[in-house]
Image (cartoon, rainbow over all chains, first blue to last red; front, side, top):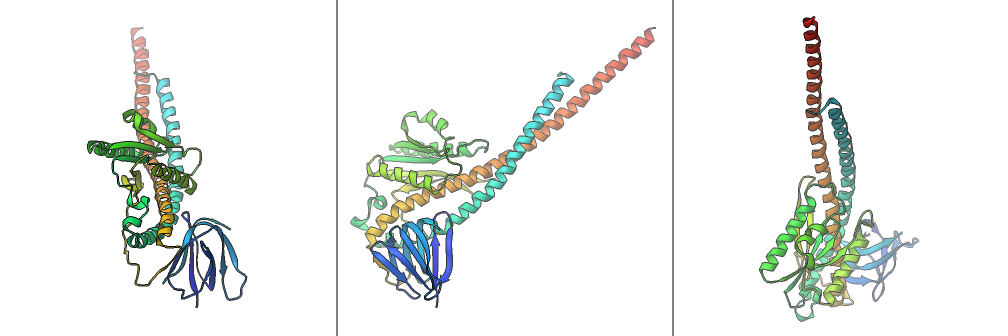
Length: 85
Length: 290
């Protein structure tokens, strides 16, 4: 019961881990991704990606700027141009 | 024949040159490792992006395709984006890139196309200016920063896309070296704009992917990013190539300096011996005369 989450920038791979849920600031609204999410692709707006390591845990917040998110069989991949924190 | 003192002076000067080249070689070796690590770290992003591009480009085609992908219908004015280093001391790297760029330019001109240049890095300016003084459109200065990174790539790509939108050129090619090893850096030419549809399995599985906003909008957003990534890749390649070429060139220079020192030392010893022998003969001849 885990979602594989990857956060990649052009400079490096920031995250590659199994988490419970990730909330992504999509261009048309935030969306949460849990394990088994349907294939989905969206551009993201500048904002905060919230990573929930376990259910009900305090989310870890990562500032991202510019990019897009892709949900596939392999999990969630966020390609961001800039990452802070 | 040079005097003993002159020879000694020359030996010393070659020795200090050798020290410099040796230091530069070691610095290049250390920097090469860093540059290679940076190139490695950038790979996942580029791979993901081209995979997504491939799956999207297959879906969006025909009239709906953005100009960056489909081109503006013309194939007359070509822009060569030539990526060179800012510093010398790296063997034939820059001249190889320039040679490749001139070759491409000649080929395009022979086909009756117009060619202009967009130069990145200092070292390509002079040799390209010599042959194509009037067709250099713009220069991008990367020498102000220590390591050209993604921000520079962004700036270059933004400028290129703006030029494309203004209709200043129809097709852009990127000329840069691909780093293969410290000994081999092949100059490569790749089409940058319009974006060539990346190869890869365009199907991406059977799953129906939902797009938000829609395919066209995502693709329109993705294409500039893709151009940026291509330029960034070229900057990384040039960084690694520069250090690799520099390491090899400096290794050769150090070895040459060593050979020169040996040769000069032998010459020095011979002259010293000759001087002693002459002196002895003079003394003996003098003694005999008495």
